[in-house]
Image (cartoon, rainbow, N blue to C red; front, side):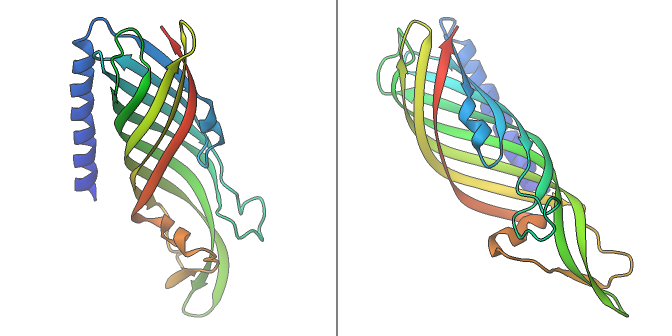
Length: 230
């Protein structure tokens, strides 16, 4: 797993260097800043800012940076809850895409475009789960609290449409599909008096893996943004 993570980070770094070099080679580039207000309402709330820079007459580079925060439904607030439970979530994210516009963008960054995108997200949060604890002499149920680290590697192919509404204001609408590779770690430990333990409230098999391990998921993206050119 560490070997896979190292290769992924190295590949992302190389792509970033190549794309930034391409942008620097174009002294006539334009910048468009796009706050992503809809990201605040995602399942993982975040403050995101997308920055697009013109590279050539038909291409541009867009970098997305984000700060993640918030909480899921919490068993800490409702001991009888069977909902996905976590609190104190914090993290960061970054995405890089290379846009190819289907028309010449000499005068403005607008029109239909196709864009491959790669990204990374790092989250940590506190988890709470009920476990059946088994000891040599007796058994009991306990709410275990532990820290989860969640790393997500993602890649998408996006199709979008960007329109210049005025001299400095843009609208950007896009959608896409790809995959996410999610890597989970935690510091959950077996109690000193226990021989083993099982989760006592596994209400959704899709969530059982979230202690540790790797999962690959089909992923979709879509949003609408307002941008400001500088």
